[in-house]
Length: 319
Image (cartoon, rainbow, N blue to C red; front, side, top):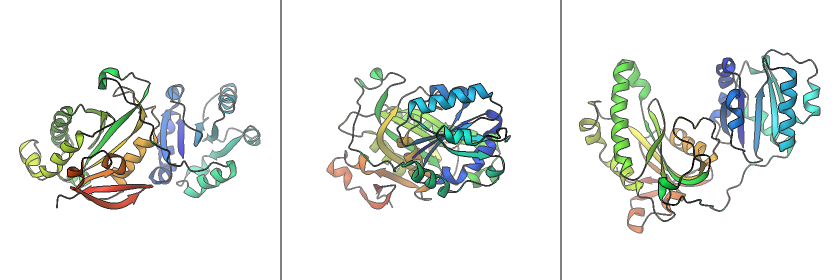
């Protein structure tokens, strides 16, 4: 289920802490959207609950937003950090799923709360549907911002970054990370890949999917096999870098880099979960979607790993 929190800027830290347990859960895809950007949100499926932060908003605007939710048939809930409404029942009479006050957000919200809402409203977990690939004509030349396409996604993250921060100054560490990022970008660019998001020591690269093969798998393998050489010769780390890679194929609405904050995608959330929660080990992990497009010779380089979020996972046999 998707949970979209439409927040007022000053309240973001409080809400991130309040929803921390939900964010970490494998059962939910959670996104925070600034209220000023909320109109640009791509319409989600029916398994979505909007949490609207009404703190400081005029009553007329709130009523307008509630009416819009109901008109579109969207589930919604309210966040009221100033406890400004005495007639809370009005919201429930207008189909609200939940109402959170400041006192209720002191501690992280439990998963059970979301599960109770789902049961109350008859929301069923989204089942995995048959593949519906949307291929762009002529690769990147045929991709139009705002439209949905199928991509091969590659997640890469440097491990032990917390320990590195303890021993390396932030400016020096940023230089090291940048050198690694630049090398990866140059390598994956050869496979028609682009760096779509980069946060601290974590990157997401996307490749327009051609419907028949996954050329980027060989660059991913090179990144794993040549980790020692890459660490010492192609970056300024001057020490062995541990990193993990996860790959998946799926659909998402495309927006240019820097304008991806309003994209809500189960596919992207699932990939980040795989990359960050599946294992603490370095290595290359791919979903069954990627594995199915490998040739038989390449498939032999991978072995079955434990399933994750309903998908079979395969790991590269390099050790």
